[in-house]
Amino acid sequence: MLNKLTRFGIPIMLVIGAIAVLVALFSASSQSSSANGLKRFAKGELEDLEFINGQVRPSSQFENAYGKMITLAEYGDKTIVLNIWFEACPPCQEEMPSLAELQKQTADEGVKVVAIAVDREHNREGNRKALAEWSDGVLDFHFDYSFGIAIDTASRGMPTTIIYDRHGEEMARLSGSADWASPEALALVRDVAVR
Image 1 (cartoon, helix red, strand yellow):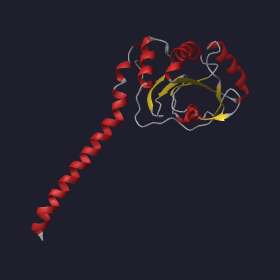
Image 2 (cartoon, rainbow, N blue to C red):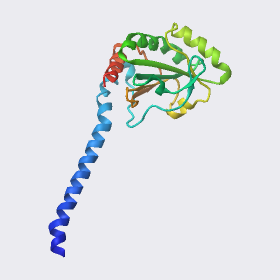
Image 3 (cartoon, rainbow, N blue to C red):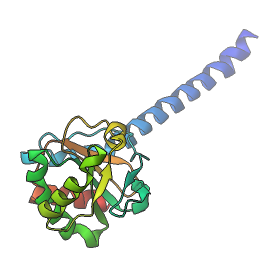
Image 4 (spheres, helix red, strand yellow):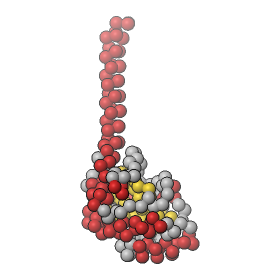
């Protein structure tokens, strides 16, 4: 009996162990490979980019410009640059023109900038006017008075910008303002768009 166990059991256990190691290595490399390829963009204004593996775009509902409740899935397989902001936020105002420029430069490349104002319901119109002014009418207005999108994305302040690839996987995020029309930011978004 011991001889059979030694002859068959140990090799089988070794094979199972080897398979487990290979699965673990493959899983770890596939989760971090997308972020590792983007770490080269974490410099200059984007030096605080964060890469969080395994996060997918949230299913939180928010209002579009017409008051219809939608989710980010509404934009299909586009690369989403999600910007969470509000009217009384100076850094949000500072970066909004560059997000509008990013949208103009990448719209034909399957990129959609989705700027969602999170604020109390009675501030909807103030946020709508601010976005129209700051983005020169380029960006569509979205509004979330439930703050669900900020909570579900674990945003740690305003503005927060999160880039999702066309499969809905989070690729990078930045808390704080940046020049999203800079060569580095454009290169980052374009790199994600072709994945």
